[in-house]
Length: 454
Image (cartoon, rainbow, N blue to C red; front, side, top):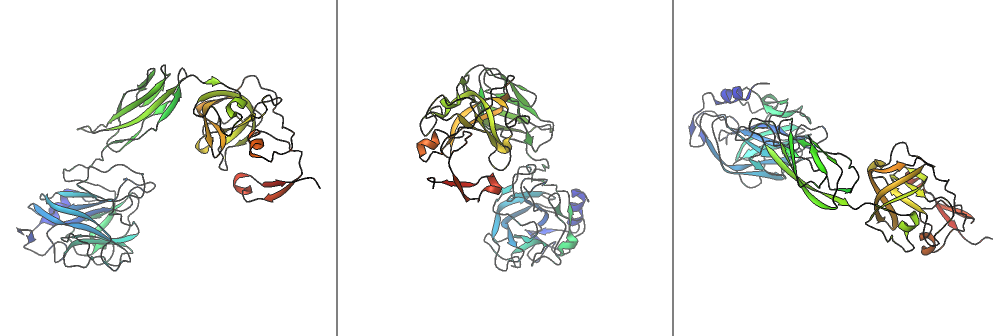
């Protein structure tokens, strides 16, 4: 790939400025001010993308500064009217050989951060498969064939390129201007290459950005699951500082570890510093809530005798036998039950344990029939009580509990009756009719109806 210095030198040969106009044949179109589009990256944020945001880079290939007012505009590949979005460029002066970096829209959160852009316009969200970007002295939306247009690039299926449309960009390639003088043919003037975004200060390394680790709730006196710190952009390796950590926790390299010793909520401020010659930094804040030691409660106490748990919001520890396991299929959790007889009429002895996304907080070795201890936060979800453990909140008991026995009862026909057996393993004595199978493939559920015996 040709160097940027050689591009600037090649494009500036024989050029002299009168005001803002070229004295020789213009480098782009009849309205040229001397500026050209030097690079366009159209897949920012996509899976596997090099950069998180799309960008357009302008170049002054001449031997004198250029002051410019206008905009960069975008029209879809099949559009026939004016552009649909633009990035205003107002009164900027670009030195000889200098660049201007315009950050556009994004397809997602993938990729590194750009260098600090000179202009930001999230609405300039060009399609990667085809379209037209053009530089114009107009500050209102216009067409790519308007006389005010300074330069343009059409790619893919564009219906209005200069000459033949450019092709070949991808999530890791941008369109970049070649060494050759502008021929007004996009296929000849642009080639796909590794993106090299450069702003007006000559910065080519993206700004460093710390990732948000997410708010955490931990238990006093219990070792926390390590909290890894990550960043994107800049130049690795990164160094970290953490202010406001709860007592007992410490930052070791890029990981927060330890055992909290004081109950309370702390706002933690992270600072990441990259390894460039002039280091860049970024900060991120999140909270760590240290709850009190969990109370040991039976499942019946957690469920309570009312429609909602009296312990909602509390961190509790309980024990039970796993009666059902749903690692996949959408539930992402398991049911546990207190073995033995129903000791608390009106309160269920069964409980749902939500393992988080993809059931990640349920240990791989725990299966139906195992005896477990569960420590987590009590909550209500869609009218059902559940406990949500942390990553270390489910452990298998060294001494197994007696097997959980199904409750042999007539299926309860009132809300109060069903609430008192919520989550329990039942052996109904009724006669049932299958009423629907809508969720059989999704949740392994079937609908049952019961009535009086004939």
